[in-house]
Length: 203
Image 1: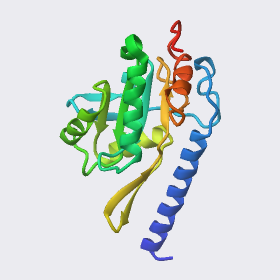
Image 2: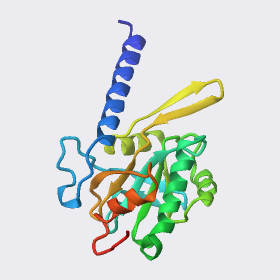
Image 3: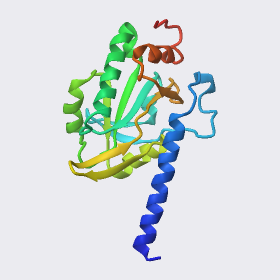
């Protein structure tokens, strides 16, 4: 097999594996922090990215308070802005407890999503949401550590991205607890957040 054909075949196989892993993570059962990361598929966050405020951030920033992590891109037409609006609504529902939850929006588009672009984009959402970006290599490392998937696609309307759309809920130790469910409104999500906000009665 010619080198280029072999390279493309390997690339396609790798994309298939990453997509399978992303789907598997999305289907993991929700669990309390005491049982976090006991599944065979373990999310081990590792990244060094630039925030929309210009600071360098790493997986260490996931510690100290529970957090949400979501992958997307600023030119996304529907899923990303809808999800960020849902998270904004969730913050409003948390009321006085909102500052106890961190959220990180990690871009999958290194070419377009600079810190400046992210800063403009995030003005439409809750100010506690932090945008993160970097080089393609840095973003790929972040995705792989979360077992997330992203692939650039070309269509009639131009370039777009297929990517993992689940919201990762992390506990205060930076461990993956499970996918946060906002598909049925904030009530289910608030119940899930009680696992990582001990002593707080949210509903």
